[in-house]
Image (cartoon, rainbow, N blue to C red):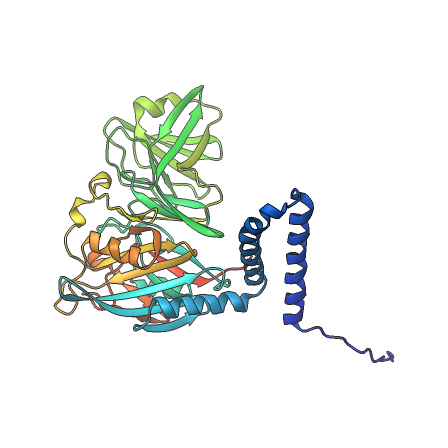
Length: 420
């Protein structure tokens, strides 16, 4: 039988550890500043105190927040409480709030729902795009998409082709590009520790036989017969029809495995290029082909991208560029959906109901001013109108014209992080 020996345990409170660590780091900063700075003369003393003490105090505060999640949570909760004073604020999860409000524009009401999330406080959750099904030409209601992804909150995503459900514009999920950009429209990039916005272009090419050929887009409907488009299995089992005088190349790995003027099957581990024979014919007989796909801006380490347009807020200023992104058709006063982020790295998702007396909707400029008033340093418009819908904890919380909202191509969801 094993002998049991009683050992006395000395338990140091967590808060004590935090204070010791904070003090140690603070002392290190002070010593570093003292050792590596030139001597302080009497005439410099007041000036040095005026700059050094606040800096060190700020650094100490940051250190305490970094090592104490409770302080981060308390700071976020207080910020939300002050920011949305007088409105209904519900806690979805730590670091994720749902706010309901009514604001007046031109003397008439607009129902607005806001989700604000701080990723450091909500460290067990992530925000990302989601598609309706396993292939792109599909549509589902937001509630179905949210439930299929075990999400606690969601809004409708980017624009899509109503007839098929294929997303229109850049869509990346977990580092994989599902669809490429159109019309140089703006998109939001989601990184491990923050966000960025930019007007995204595709930088893709295929090389072989000493030739380098531009790939114009990925899994998007054809706009010009001269375009070369790449289709992956996310599109479906077969590539769409070739343009006049066109050809298709089936590629697996770095090998061309088939060529035809007729639609080819898309391999599970490959893709099909569709375009004019005058261009793709240059690759006939190539023993080896190489494809390179990037985006411009080249967002290093971006995890997800959701496309929309136009800009609403750019570098903390209202900026609505409808014409530049060929979005004149979505003007006027309508239901709206938007996404943006603040200087504190809080993500903001909003929906505004419209087309009814109790909620008249927003113009894009009104939406931009709203996002700026909520503290967004950058924000973009997403699909709106009949698509505008928000989901929180099992329920649709806004009032879309069609009960539950129309079937969508894609969404932006907040769900538990998956562990590999």
